[in-house]
Image (tube, rainbow, N blue to C red; front, side, top):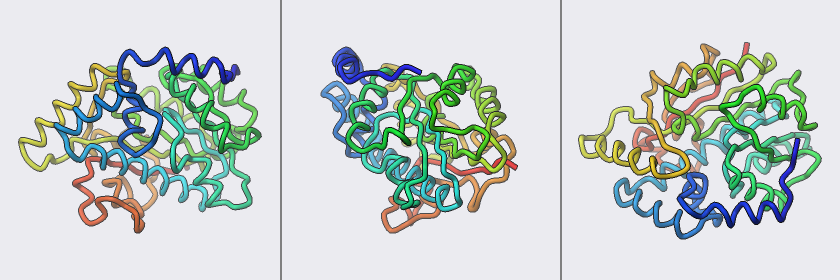
Length: 282
């Protein structure tokens, strides 16, 4: 496993500013500080077409936090976050440590974008325990290599239960890219008792024709970024859990999944445009 060093990380950041980065756009929308003019300009173009896009992104981030906390409270001590993007407020390792004050959780962040790994390297240096928290470069679309890197990381024991987190990622994987085969592979590698955390933006029941068209327009916008998009209904998304039993309350709009006092859209979850759930491997 090769860890990117600090100087290489800075160089990667400098060389990534020719087009918007989906990870940095997301960071901008959720109130992070790891983004540049090209990302902010793109984000505001999206917000003009879909005014609540920032709240949708925050909904995804809030779901991640509640899901990680729930997994940790159920006794899960290992987290593998595929497509982790940029570390920002409410990182997986921070939430897991808060839920388990004994600080016995191990977290592996994985992203295929050099820019995301670069930022992770720079930002994790400030908040992470290097014995328990790593960021590595690997590609969801190269599952054999990714899983070998997980096993070689030195911080994840694949023989024990893992919470595999794929949050706000599936809407960047089109059906022709075989998401079913990819998730089959990862589910097969998990030990019994592992948890699978999934979420994505949805085109389920648009409020009206205007919103339906706006969602289509946003997909067109994202074709110009590092990550083109693809929306799914709940029925289209459910298959990614592989038939594993879903924890209560099942696959739902994200704000309806164990909401707390901070949950956006808690009173009207279907307005969030985000669906998610957690399934347990038998």
